[in-house]
Image (cartoon, rainbow over all chains, first blue to last red):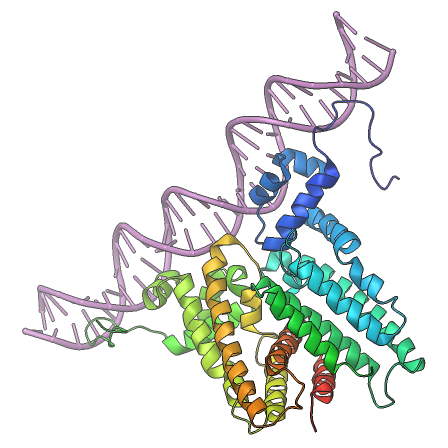
Length: 203
Length: 203
DNA sequence: CGATTTCCATAACGGCTGGTATATAAGTTA
DNA sequence: TAACTTATATACCAGCCGTTATGGAAATCG
């Protein structure tokens, strides 16, 4: 069994770049959500026809999951990088400024694909929702682990709850994503980030 | 010009309670979002047929706006009440515990109708999105005013930015709504609230 | 009692949804 | 060149979307 068909050498070669098409699909999902993105929206943005899309990616759900993979790999990598900061405060700083940069980057749709896809929508998107929520839970576990270590290393005052701080950081991040998606300016979100970091314990 | 047709005395009386039907519609929008809620979902939950719905409420968009009015009046009233607290810390406490109660009330759908409706979706829902975002902006202005007053009354340390704190409070609230919609337990959200209030300046 | 007015139920509308069958074009292999 | 394999293009499918026309039922008014 093979994970993916190894670029066949026989037959007519495809006329489009799979990676570029997937990147275009990501942009559509990112700005309209899973249900809000119609197949017509997707094929238009990807510059291919529906049969080509189905042949290359399976169906809409499979396309979304591949787009989500790409998103995590390229766009949400700041989260993984943030956890490598030497101190808990460094983690918080890298996370919030990284989110700020990504949510307000003029090349991207505003907001967070994970947040957009995890809020309630129609029944057909329930499996999508579950998949996205599960990835969020994994990210949360990683942060809990990181802050447990930080607590052990004395990054926090004795009376602070590292799990609570992790949840807090995630919540502010999600709130920032919601506001970015609602048209908040970069200056507004910067103020949010700076206020949050001023409240953060230590330093 | 009349705001609403004054219950006509002639003709066959309707067989359902408009208020109860609207409350049922609110529950559907609240759990599925505007686009995720189909007319079939709505009529099923409201216990009426489509022509009755259109006669009583206009169309789907008008129905949503009336449901949104009801939501603000009955469900999101804790926000207005919170701003009446005597101190800024009191505002923050009432707001967060009020949100916690509402987002996790077992009688309600989990999460916040405003957040659900303000994240990106299809093109047809753009006017809905704008309406909801505008209400959020009004709520934000009210909080900015309240915290400007708090600053003048000496509720905050001299170096704190009241606008930043308002935005911060809103962001945590939105994050809490996102997490509640993703299945977070009340205990988790309680921990988030307590952590946030511990970080809040003063007392 | 009609006459009138309004509501309810059924069924249908055009348009869009995600997904495909068919036919043709464009390559590689022999 | 002939055979084969795969991609593209067009058209189409059943099903759902929000919305509405139609016909009859139930109430009040004169």
